Image (cartoon, rainbow over all chains, first blue to last red):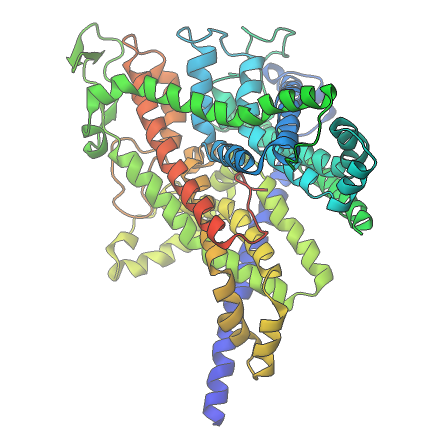
Length: 286
Length: 335
């Protein structure tokens, strides 16, 4: 009996030791990535990298390009994604909704390099629209990548609003537009916004869809949507990593550091909004 | 919400506008499929099934005037499009990545939920979210500057002793760019997808069943093994399939740490390798200079293959989810 008891305990201990090691394998790399990249980046990040372009050893054009691309993605995929999510949650009949949801999920499974390739063939190349490397090409490729995510978070945000609120609105004789604007949108908004913020974080970190659509430029992005390539932070890391010489490596690290800081800020922002929305909805549920 | 109550004009307008947006993802998917198939057709005619068996992928002599023609498709002299090495590289790296990521994610999350106090749990869960948010180019940078060299110096040499039993583990171990490093980095990238889903799944395990097991005198480990794990098994399978889809299509990180081997099948697990995705990114620049245009089509063939493989894993994942249909639906792209 005693030996059986020991055997049980031994097996349990071995299992939990394995689980503990597994937890360390999850935690240590994530700390190490952030710490080692920031450690390499911080000495390089001086005020002048925000005022010089990559041609002069700064990051100004890349930061501006990343911001332009982000704004473009929010304007295109953000708007359309929120509308699409609204349709699936509030208007589409159940069967149609599940078909649309399915296609949105299929789109989210398309590899980013395939999106980049298609963007190149259809938007950039002479055989397609012939825009050359451009801001609009990059925005559309990133937008296609991020659209299903926004559709999904928006849909979840709307369908998370308690049923009692809708019934109340219907009982008051409100139209659908009124119901959506006055009753559903306020509690759904934090969920939608946090979805948009996280979507922005994802698109800030992408490289593959941009390489052959936005191209890359050492100059600040021009005002034109097409015919002019755009630099972006992840592109600096990717390009300069492959170039010999300490200056390039330093700039690659600096760009990676700035990218990580932007993304971490966005993720924390998104978390704050999500926490707020949970409290809000919890309070409304009767 | 499709009750056919009377809609006002404003309702109808909003419905119509949002319907266009609702159908957009489907439209984009259809458009992508058509573009990939049309662009790949010349390459399919040129290479046929040799594409799947050939190990030589070369764009040919892009500066020569001579061309070769096969099945009515012209390519530069010496061009050959055999993708076997990339197919092997794609499956090898992504499957090794899952072999690492699945047990680590499940074990780590079990540890987290069973033993770590709730307060600390939420803090540690933030790390999962951080890991999901790190860009793939940063994973690549870390992989080649920090992780690869450390592994090649301290860990891989120890692994070579397994080579006496499994020949694939035999050295030389190289400098830390290759199949194993790529797989490990991919594994770390896939962990957040599987781990966050596992966490959600664990929340859904019925408390009564667990309490019953404890009342029967089972230890925490036995409860986990007998009650918890069987309950979440299918959900983990679904998350793993989605994670696999992500690993198959990952481009930049793999391109940076894989050592980028052309036309060579890996001879051990440390060998340089290439995946379908990383090859498209690596060769598109050169392919654009092909005066016959056939190189771009060959890359479309690669892209089409990647698209089909990753959509299949994605479908499989969604099918499994449908069968379990718990609340824990993982979203396609990390985070």
